[in-house]
Image (cartoon, rainbow, N blue to C red; front, side, top):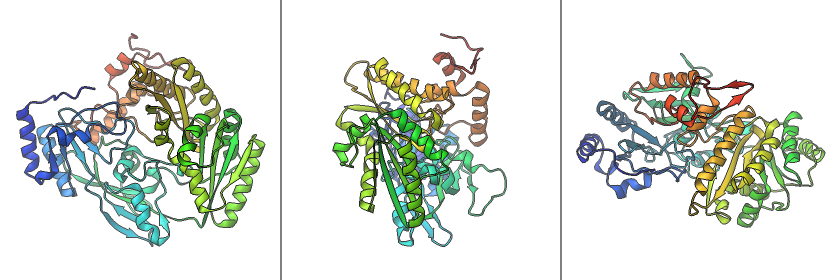
Length: 493
């Protein structure tokens, strides 16, 4: 992507001077060497230098920034820690990046109400560290939890390995304080069981910075389980592994975590973390149970019975907290471990019904041959959230393009099986073409109407998540589902 400036020096100077009138000089960056660290998020194949980066440290400063940008009609991209994987925080050439990294204060912890009030720049893991003394923790735990911020988690509705039992961000956030493009401060949700007016909190969570800028979040805390144990099960066939996942849920068991990895993933992770994985298994499952000891023992026994019936070739159960963390370390480090076997990887995020796990995995295997690229599969099997890692070498001409096409076909296959193009990474820029496959024009017009209600001038993170009619027409994807052709009135190219 081009990094050429799309603005004049005079325009940049005008914006910088206006922002410096309400911010300290150190909080307004505009020289290329200062803005370079903000040119991309975790999807580093797309880069763009922003015109200006602002680093507010208070809600009052966020209000002032948004009022100025609104008055000057300058587009804004909100940014958390930059760990997102869909290009949601990719800057706009003539726009402002508003980073909430300096808003990193834990405002209040109430162990009796089991809530914490935090600013958006607080790291996910820092919340659990701060409340551990009270025997509490914050449940959503993305693999990037050591670095990702709660503001970004709200923007993307992040999950993690324990999302099956404890839910995504939307299930663990009680209240959000945010600033609109006009500079109005609004509170969504509340600490009571219900809040007056429309329930806009779940609309805002997962909106990818397109509706407003988060300045404060109230999260729900839960007691740390007295015991947690993990089953590590190996399978000689991915179909058996997929069927085992469905079997666990069908038995009425909701594990604290239910993750699956294929042979490619296990083999790239095991030398890196030495988690004890069977590198000859076609698939492995990690099934965690937590709660009181008696409850855990009963659930572990029930899950073992299901796994054995499903054809598990080997089963191990953690006998200490150290061993439990070691079993999980492989899954948590799958992304960085990819660097051991490939110069580059492209991480996809799609969701499917659990019953389709085996069919989708077999479909991905066929695509590996079609595109001549390897794919390591790691995913939240319990809720059908896939994270295929397509391995490629950007130094080889055409390989990234093949990886992109590979990823697009995986996402469209997810839709074919009744799933979605994203589970927790968001749409951003990466999946905007696949929005044309999953949704009708009338549905996307409804999305745009919601955005317009919050952001009438369309200045907050525009060009992301919701494709234009022209983009869908140019994509020209023939998509038939249940005998119906989506966008039948559009010309095909």
